[in-house]
Length: 423
Image (cartoon, rainbow, N blue to C red; front, side, top):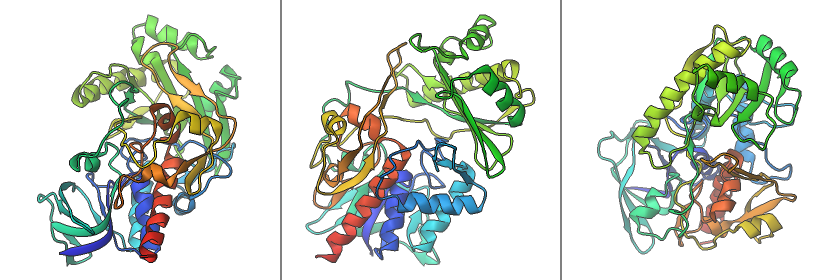
């Protein structure tokens, strides 16, 4: 039976950071990922760029390493506001493989943990038998023993298998999902010149040139309480029958680092939270086609653009959250409560999307806040990182961004290293 210090279920943002730092510190780590590549929201869901966080952030070694390695391949850029999170999703797949290989992390792709036996001092986990367990020319048994187990699945699947308690507001509060996509063949210079002249609100629409690439960003929602410059264009698209009113509920675009002609869309947002995932994918792809036609018709520079990529996975903003050793609250966040062992420091706002017009929340926080390690502890040997941490719904709405998930994973890895070292 193969033995590990740490088995991590889920190779998304938090899982990769945890695996890399733990491996770099000398722990024996196995990362189990259901997809054929790492990166989670960045790669599978095309969540780019990563949002900017606090200047005094902690546990960002992995974030900086990922940026540096991507930048060498022309796959990462820093925006004019100092945000280093402009990543190329396809190159990120390659760089993440390389980074984890460098620190000797074992990875099982297209695999999931089927069964878990909780022993007195370890877990025995059984991996999905459909996979062939050969890694670096060594065979891996389907039964694996580990000192610690980390749930980085995003949906708390490991905690569910072990029958741990979830927070009571999980079924009462939710956020719409989305399905991101990329259009290529865009004349970025032409589009950015038109866009910057059309919308002079630099809090909404901005542009910069870095690494010899033009980067830009703009947005629109159907909310009537915001004076969006793009509103007349979207109204025209609805009136002309190119898009539906629901298609226009949320629209946000960013150019893609390392490319000269690609734009990433943070939409469409799927309003019906009662849809199954299968129904949501179908509905979203129908909307993507309409939005692409809309851009080609009304946006200068999109005349020859085409859909070049659709995310493999829905962008899920909130899911079940586990009841951990400490439940992090909205008041903790707003008050900037200090903790003895924080795993992250951020100032990202409470960002909650709504299916209703004028119903979304973007509540700024006026000081940096901390998340304690205790919100990642489920029991002595089981931990959770990512969007399903032990936090209230509103607090999770601020903590779910990529840099914070990186910090959670890194902070947990350092905590576990010290725990093993002091045993």
